[in-house]
Every structure is written in C-alpha cells, then in structure tokens.
Amino acid sequence: MANEKKLIVGNWKMNLDMHEASLYLHQLSKLVKVHRDVEVVLAPSMFTLQSLSLQVNLRQFKLAAQNFYWRDHGSYTGEVSAAQLRGIVQFALVGHSERRHIFNENDKDIRNKVAAAVRSHIRPILCIGETAWERSSGETHYVLHDQLIGGLSNITSDELEQVIIAYEPVWAIGAGQMALPGDVVEAVKAIRRQIEHLYGKAASESIQILYGGSVTADSAAEYLNLPGVNGLLMGGASLNAHEFSDIIKKAHNSLTAAKKG
Ligand code: PGA
Image (cartoon, rainbow, N blue to C red; front, side, top):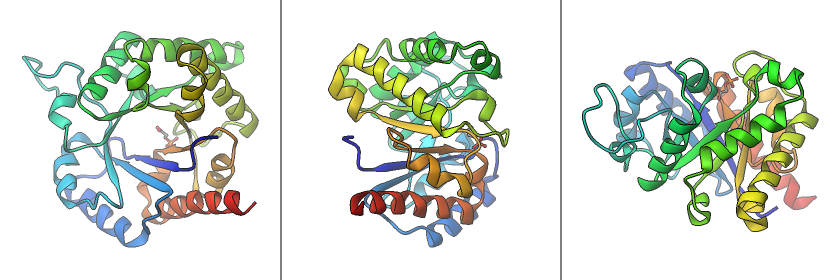
C-alpha cells in the first residue's frame, strides 16, 4: 500500500470551553512526541479554533474544523465558511454522522462542502457509514457507494489527492460498540473498489482511509494494523490526553513493527 503514514484525528465535538481547550492542548503537547510517520489532527469546537491556532505547534498537531458552510461569503447569519477558516485549519470534517442525522445534512450539502474545503486549500475528511438498520438489512455497501458518489461528485482526480475518507459505522459512534475488524476490512475494500471505479487504481491505492467508532487505547492497535486502514478518527478517546497520546504512540509503533516485520 502506498501510504506509509498514519493519521490520527481527535474530534472534540461540543466539548471543552476556551480555558479547558487551551489547558488540554498544553497538556497534550507535553505528552506527544513528534513522529514523522504520524500526523495528528485536532478538531476543537469552532469557538476555540482561532485561539488554539495561535497556541498550536504545527509541527506537532494540525487543526481541523468540525463543520463549516460551503459558500465562501455572504448573508448567512451564524455561519462560518471554509474561505474564512483558511490559514486557521488544515483539515475539516465533512458529513460526520451527527451532521447528517441531527442536522439533516444531505448529499448535496456534503458534496458542496467537500468542494468548498478543497477550494480553500483545506483537506476534507469525508465521513461515511451505515446505520444499524442498513447493516442488518445487508445494505452497507450500497450506502457506502451512495455516500461516496454523493460526496465526491464535484471532485476531480487532481482534487481527490486532498481528500481523506473516514469509515464510521453510525451505530458504533459514541456507543461503546465496536465494529468487527473483519467488517472494517470489508468496508474499506469496498470503498477502495469504488474509488478505483471512479478515479482509477492509483487513486484507490493512495487515498487515505480512516476508521472511526468507539476506538479506545485498548482497541486502537488492532484497527491500526488492519490492511488498508491509514488511521483513526476518535471522539471520546481524544478527550483524555493520556489515552489520546497513547494511541498516537501505538500508531507510530504499528508502522515501526510493519517496517521490521
Ligand atoms: P467516538 O466518536 O470515538 O466517541 O465513537 C467517533 C466520531 O464521532 O468520530
């Protein structure tokens, strides 16, 4: 596989106020060593992003927005655009299941956001995944297929190099219920097949695909070692600095072991 780097993303969701976020970043920066083969991305709430962007050491951590609006400027009360986030974040989550299911984001919103992020030189992390009902009805691969097509239809082959995919089964998020490793491998294979169909073999091999859904320090190594999985997207585990730094260490160790083995 072309990717010899792991990407570890912490989604803080609507947690930590300005003071707590700053303290947390300070604590995490003491615990985490910079590894060239592991990129660590923090996704704080929109409100704390700007002050953290002044505090963060970009060699150690990159920043991500959890959400944004897809138009660049205009009369959209309460919204923040990717164009406004340029220079503050390097990544952005798009289509997280909480955005799809709580805030009713549809494929059109999501594809516009993927394109807006790319336009503003921010790398979109497109989140896709099936619900429990879709899985039990045998529809997982159809759902992944539709969400990929839905999210990427404005994206050219060149632009795809900026895009990261996160496979996050909806039923596993925040639930303490983890996907079986074999099922994750199957889903990631299906995603690569679809990318190959849309963009060709080289793109399907080089695109970074993350797994997310109730990952903890105890389960991280197992997911990190799965074929085709280039990293992790975590909610709960990213809010504990010791646990999160432990996971970052595991990501580095998984690559070191793979090189030796
Ligand atoms: P979780 O969240 O790790 O708490 O399940 C994952 C996510 O929402 O991306």
